[in-house]
Image (cartoon, rainbow, N blue to C red; front, side, top):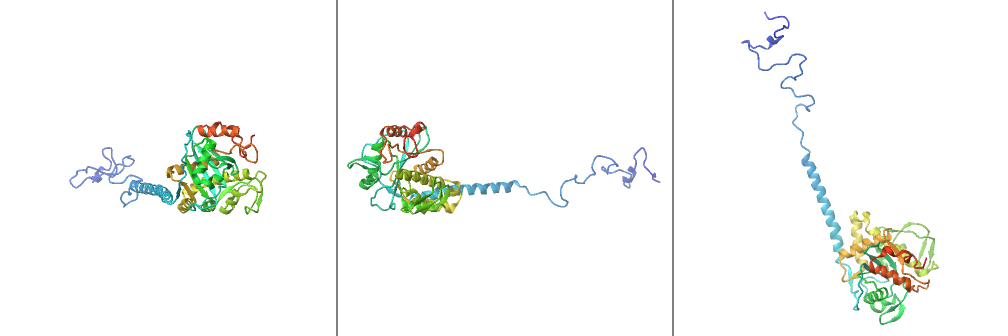
Length: 360
């Protein structure tokens, strides 16, 4: 008869003997043993009755590929849209036949007129701006008052804005080069109606008038302080002069402000990341501008970027040095001013650069 309890020689081993009295190779452990019973899953091994989890790595790789694809498509969009718009832009001859100066910097001439780009009739230019960048100093945006008295080749001394009426873009470029000694490397022209359309395509721009302005001739009535304005108001602000004692000088300051705000808004992330706005801005700009026929798209993009930066705090905004409000140039200061532009040493302009062109 089997023993009634455990003993010193085997405890309950007799319970696991088969009919022949042999013990199996494996058996449950004795109570208190640290070895888990055979054929049992370890604690926390997962849900019972289900296979291993599906690996996540393939799904992660799939999402990563999708993100890369979307990035490539977006970059292609940012390149293709401007290229298509550029193919539709008006090209004009702006290269003079005369001997041209050499310099160390890059300078663009930006002109505003009352006509559309495809209109080949000639008028006088209300806006003349020079943007200079490169060299050791910051970008500089220079206003040339339209009533400045200069020597126009073949036409004697008269107002600078008459150069365009006499000989179009080539004569205006030649006049500016001979008066300043600065080579004009790029030329762009915008009609005022086009400026209005570009501002509207951007959803407006911010201007910051320093006083209330009421100008019946310009159809402008705005309050002092920074504010978002549409194309119609931006154009009126850029053309207003009778509301100011310094007339044409104030208008030049406003024109620099408006043009700079357009460049800054056009290069902002809110434009680049909105496909509808980006397309509309590129198309409207192409329809509103004329550029020199020797201008390439990459150089124009750089010009637009530098223009926005010049008015966005990383550049300088100046009026050509003048002797008085009749916009007679201060020849001694103007000569030194343009030498710095020509040499690319705009970091040494100092007080030669002022908002109104007057000596400090």
